[in-house]
Length: 62
Image (tube, rainbow, N blue to C red):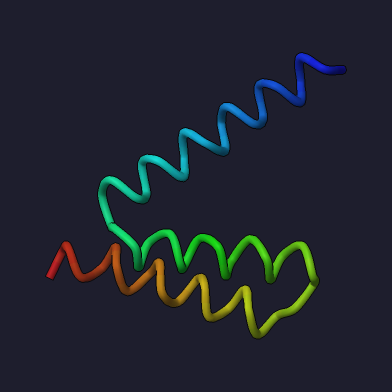
C-alpha cells in the first residue's frame, strides 16, 4: 500500500511541475481550483479551475 501512495505522490508532483513549467502561475491556480473543487465536491470551484486550464491550453493554439 505505501508504494501506491508514493507513486501517486510522485505522479501528482510531476503533473504540477509540468503545468507550472508550461503555463506558469495561472496554470497552478487553475489546477489548484480544479483539485480543491473536486475534493470539496464543489461544482463551481471545479468548473472555474477547468475553464482556467482550458483557456490556457487553447490560448497556445490560437
